Image 1 (cartoon, rainbow, N blue to C red):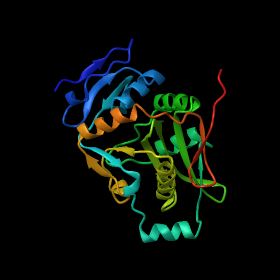
Image 2 (image 1 turned 60 degrees about the vertical axis):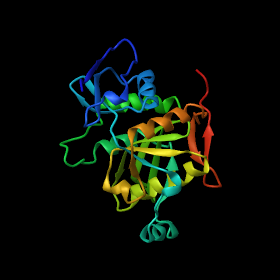
Image 3 (image 1 turned 120 degrees about the horizontal axis):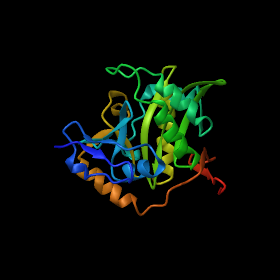
Image 4 (image 1 turned 90 degrees about the vertical axis):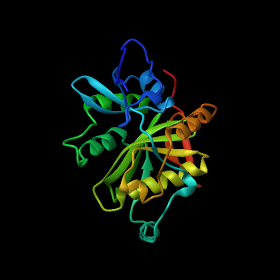
Length: 241
């Protein structure tokens, strides 16, 4: 399959079925709000940057977690019972991204979260479309994750942990909240042992695209997020400019 060179003047993406076996579909473009939203709604995400070129992927299978399939093992239930961590939403988005960027990603040398990625997703966060989960031990940020929310799908991007079980605590808390809000799935993109242990699994790309088509009919929860008293999510609307 050919790898497509994106036109910088529009947000067109080729059909995901034209992706290479690795999932690589296109190169180029930018991380503007319009392009990022077009990508996620099409089942595509940016993964790497080489010089000024961004690499866009649509893997097959797609690794996802259905909220009702979340696995919380006995050891994690003990962590929650001890209230070892405190979890918040959208209190320090860029700091979470920077911590994710500083986390080694074997077998890769360095990080794919460049300053351009931070700027692009920070812009989405400021528009109320990208969100962070923060995990605190006392007053220290020890774990977290971030991603993009469109309709009833949360597109997870990256996570970090500086203390054992911190990122799992944040992820489990988020999934439980999203389930209360009627979310249909969490996109984990590609397989990892960490997320697989929590119940994520691969589905055919065609099936993932069907979920995306269904998702287009749901309203997006736009704004700054916080946990509600019942464990769901409340949204603080961002004032219009």
